[in-house]
Image (cartoon, rainbow, N blue to C red; front, side, top):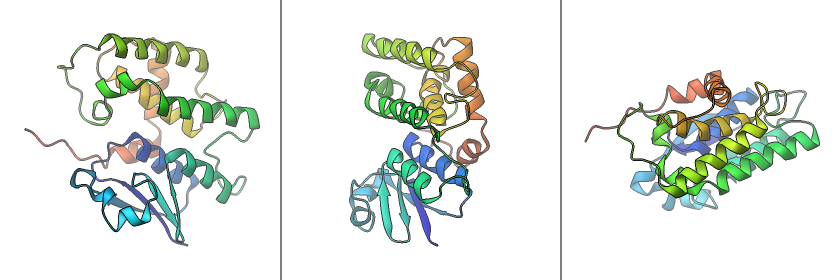
Length: 212
C-alpha cells in the first residue's frame, strides 16, 4: 500500500495538521511530502496536476487522490474502518453529524478572527506585540467562545476523542496564544487537546520562523 500526505512545507496549515493527526491516529504507515506554498508549488506541476483543488492537505492512496481535510477524515474512516482501526470521527450517527458540523463551521465562519490571528499565532512562539482585535474580530471571538462553551462539557466533544476536538482546540488557541481572554474551562480543554501525542509530533516538525 502506498499512502502519501502532502502538507505545507512550513507546517502552519491548520488543515494539514488535521489531516496529519487523522492519519496518525489510524496507525497506518504513510509518508509526508512537503509542498512549498511560498514558492507557488501548489499551482504548478506536479502538485497542480495531482490535487484537484491545488491546495494542501491532499492524500494519495494507491493513486486515488483526496483533498480537503474534512473529506480526508471521512475517507480514512471508511477505508480504515473501526473496529480494525481507531475512528477519527464519532461512530454514532448523531455525534458524527455534530462533529462534522463543528468542523464545517470552523472552516467557513469566524473569518475576521482567522485573518487577524492567523495560524502562525498557534504554531510559532508566542509574541507580545499583537494588534488589538478589530470590532469584527472581537465579535467573531465572542461567537467562538459562546458556541464552544455550549459544546464543551467534558474532556471531549463526543465523549471520546475525535478530530473535531483538534480542530476546535486550534481555533481556541488563536485567542489563548495571543493573550485574549478565554474562560478557564475552554482554556484547559484546548491546552489538553494540544498535548495529544500526534499533535505534538506535528509541532515538533514546525520550523522556527526566520528572523527579519
